[in-house]
Image (cartoon, rainbow, N blue to C red; front, top):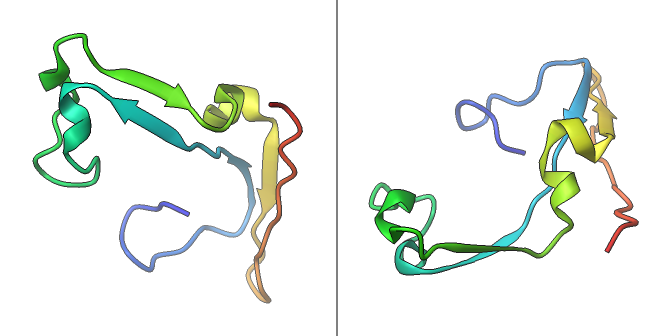
Length: 84
């Protein structure tokens, strides 16, 4: 889960969930996307994104995945992604 700062966790409530995995090729793909040197604008139109998980799961408006975070107990979730 990605949040605002390391170790802050999620607020207890029902959350929309997105899941994504991509393969990026092109001029900017040689740099780790999490590094400070990453600049997607440097690709000058040659950047190609391949969605390894269906693209619909990468947007809160189309994924239709939800998870309820509770104050206590483990909050572990398994999502069955049925589209290919």
